[in-house]
Image 1 (cartoon, rainbow, N blue to C red):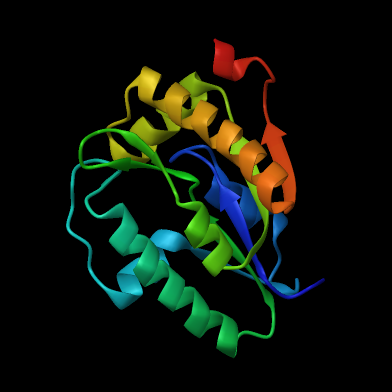
Image 2: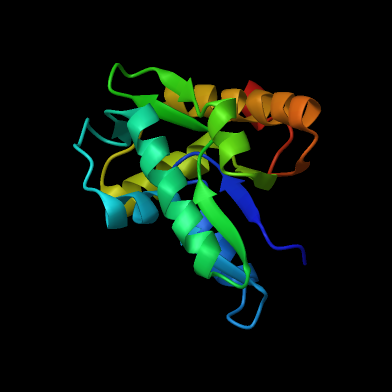
Length: 170
């Protein structure tokens, strides 16, 4: 496998962590780490509310520096559990800048999507709270559209995993 960073994206509660745990083994030639974990290692970010980011651009700079340090010491590819879309402090869905994708030298994107009702159940079970149904739908829709746009403009590899093809329209 070619060494590099692959972004594993999806809305909070879609099952990225579970997917990684079930499909990536310790002896695989890949390191799995969450973007939020890397950001926290380098700087504590201020809480803007449930699953909201106060300074999206600032967090991306921190993540970029953390990834550079990690890549220099890693002899494996990195599977980054993260997001193409973030909820900012104004409660708006914001895409991660294409500039970040290019600077981070993302080699590919895996986008995991699931039925909204299942995501809501997972968020409630894990966090005791969940995002609004419409917010989950908006994030999933924007992530898919943005991934396809990046696929066309940057020509990276894209894998889209969906439980139900019609789930975004439901």
